[in-house]
Length: 345
Ligand code: SF4
Image (cartoon, rainbow, N blue to C red; front, top):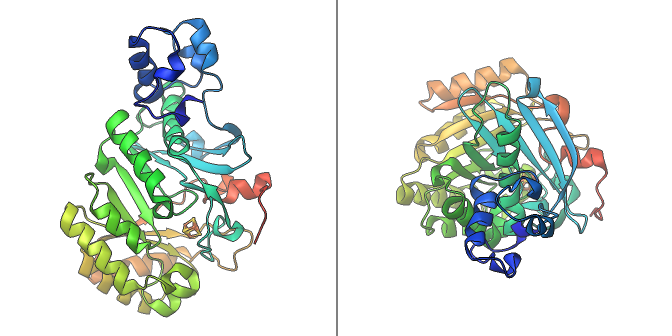
């Protein structure tokens, strides 16, 4: 499984072959990825055979929605760990949402992944392989009405990326330094791991930072996002502000709209205060309800009113599309359907 090897140390996979094979192999894995080693046309057959299985996971389930513009995969590692990635095509960009952990320990009440607890951290190679797989898929099949190359990667799948800091950092390094992606095209989304934001602030790459806020006061936020008890909003905002100051990258605030929970005028006014302080952009998205969650999505007029209120208060706001409603596209949902193998609780 070559993606589990450090891309700077592929020589052991080549064996006695000439040294230029290392560069050829690195090219096939990271620059122009292919779905199977048999497509690595300039490598000898015996080497191609030795490189299989190419991927550090099997594709257990694949679903398509939105007229083919959304593609979702459930990956299963040899040890049974399951994680998901969603590829979303738009007229001028293609975004891949990737997982950083199998499961998640943080237990956010509205999240399918959070309801099943933590399975394990993903290795850097397992994270990068999701990106390589999507690139290989796009090269071979494309998505209708979208560019045939991956333009953005967001860590918004399963897991809290900053709780798996070192492996996520290494995956980001490989995406930028080996795959040639721009740091700005990579978004790390956190639910509020303040120490991780501080570490990310000191990294050399200006990756985009998204904070999943979901509530604008500590009482409400602690009921939705339990980690808020450890890192309250004031600390989170201070860390995000330092990130903005140091990187010159505007932070975005993610807000999942839940009916009667966080879609009130009062929350909009409080959110506007935080967004203005951070000069942040706010993304609103209707909850993609999960089978075990008590919450429902806010109704469209309510979302529109919330967005209008934010706009009137001087905040840049976007109402995001929910992609793949018909295919359980919220993170963790496909895994529920397939039957998770981990111990719950
Ligand atoms: S929302 Fe993110 S941090 Fe919270 S439980 Fe789900 S995966 Fe974990």
